[in-house]
Image (tube, each protein chain N blue to C red):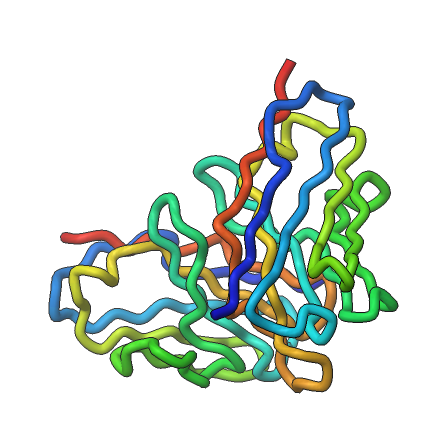
Length: 122
Length: 107
């Protein structure tokens, strides 16, 4: 069974930093691209970053570009999101998601973690 | 960047009704369109991928159609567990983007 488990959320002051982690199990982690998606309280879904299985391809939403860094450690089945210069508008539940493996024609998020809450407040 | 616009933003319906939700892309995305269902406090669940392919385990009352810029999610006969929020998503190009959501509630 595919499982994704996020951790690292919490309360942080504006301008501060936080690192989220997501551990995957039940699949060959290195074969799958991964993404982070967030959802502000009472709001819709926002895709924020993607990383290919070999970390060669990385993309960000404009809202986080230059402040957030996605990474992965395939030996540890782990996905990371380093978040710097945090703002109140970054307050959200952050989900890690799994794409289909490399070579698939279509991308979609069939597997999601349970989410971890990041609150940015003085 | 590709903008996704869903309509309506909210919808009231009864058990047994047939409902449709629309999603429009600001430029062609061919059939790189996914639909998700989200219940309060839970992670989204994939319903439809590639515009019309039903995800394993999703009831057949859900269906998707469309291509290029206009897409539709249909639910043929609403069940109590279908009252939730629905999102479309384009994965044709980065940055990926979601529609703003359609909240489906009980009339």
